[in-house]
Length: 80
Image 1 (tube, helix red, strand yellow):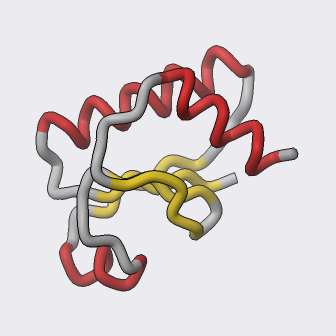
Image 2: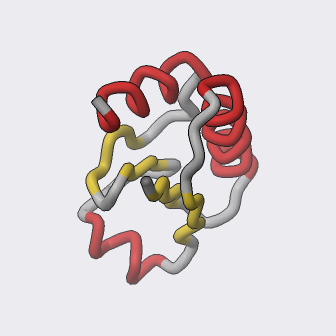
């Protein structure tokens, strides 16, 4: 599983990365986490708001910092 965190590296993006890492740890799941900070790369994903989270190349959330529980839900759905 690959989880991409899209955003310019702001505090909201860092909080999103922290939530993703915590959710993975709590679930006992392993994933490759990539940070996409280049605007041209973000545009390829089709997002207009950051931070955003993509799981295996599909945007699952954009425009807000997710809670750990939200991330866990997204991870469960994506791996189910």
